[in-house]
Image (cartoon, rainbow, N blue to C red; front, side, top):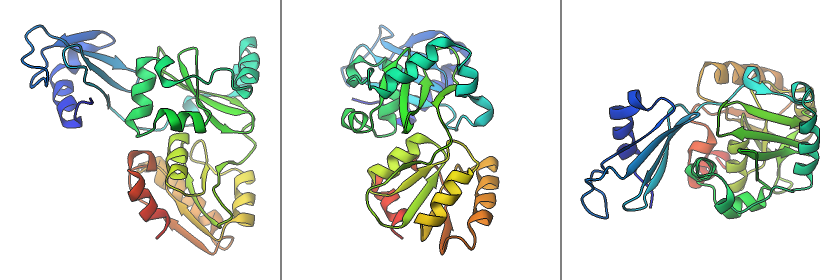
Length: 268
């Protein structure tokens, strides 16, 4: 069972000033297992949200405090990571799918984060998601992975060669959705669309050339904030004249929507 978003928000509003990096526990109001007088609802801060677990009824949840993309200034690239010798070995191991594990072997924070966007264990298996060193490693391309941390620093660590087009493609149809982050790429792909991930807000020459050669229609669906809209304007200008049909979406990122909504957007 999962706690409702409005229910979690109520606890967050009441107790977040006491959480900091610690875990607290309170009575679970309206607990399905009966009246809770022993403070069995545990609430713990995570890097970008709050985790919930009730030891009375078993309900759980993950409340995102601020859903935003970690942009280029917050990403540790392979150039920086190469200073640490273990990262080169880790990249090789990720490419060999050494750390593909069922969700039951991930940390609770990783499971809640992944499932809060509507992804399942089957999705993780299909998309070659791996869990290692308290990071969930998302496959971005050929020998390119991005690891999302759940302890300490909330930064993403990107390992591999970014000079490529990060894409997932179902078919030979020439419509592509362009997104900022990997979860949004996975969500559009799960909804049946061809999708390109920028891993940020800028379009590389590799992506621009690929889109110009492959696409007749592009849907730009970046984050609905200032950086996202500045990027959308820039990319729209670059693609104007290269692609017959370029559309922009001003809404929450695809990862925040259900599959039917995404299908309606990309098939419009």
